[in-house]
Length: 308
Image (cartoon, rainbow, N blue to C red):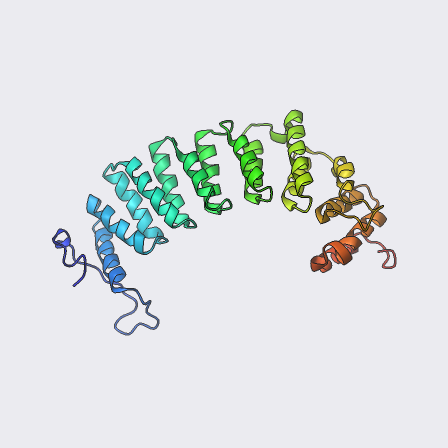
């Protein structure tokens, strides 16, 4: 007998065992007896469309054994809403579960459903920040943070300052750069970097970050994004790029990303010969691991082989 079979509370339920193809399945999954029994009771509960406090106990038990089981999470959410359970208590339970299973998508989707139903996000940004103290690049947590901003209109509620704090800790945190771009440009109807003052602020921010770590791709991409979204020519960045990659000093290149940007600027200016020189430096000296890519870029310039 098992935990549920011996429990008087569950005596009215006839469990539904796993059917993997009869008595001799080709490739049966080796579930533990405890997990198999618990799932058999969940199947019976779901077949009966039961929503009750004992269902919450059952799903909690299963989540503890397999926190990635999305069907269990979905049925738990349906049960919570059906019996009008205390959703703030659910969040408190979720906090501990999230800390134990930090990279689990289902936990954050469930949290999304609960907070959306509550229609308020008090304490959520603080909890997210506590998660970032453990892993500052957790994709699921960043996605949830963006949902919070959009759902509750937190665009100007300290999000920009939050990205600055995260990038002060780690200027190479691409997730934080992505979130900053989202905060500046993601709000519907907002000008973002189309506003000259915002554009100047964001360009300065990226340039200062590059000064700290020139061989960090994120702020270089951020600058490229600003020029593209605002309709600027890349030529506006030429003087800046040449501070880190001057063709007059080919042995003193401080950033391969600056050199790549400079090559694109030179192509834009139709100076294909110098563009080929920049790409040649990337191919042979500053980024040889991608030499085939840089060689391809040179081929696209259409120069005679001897020149390229």
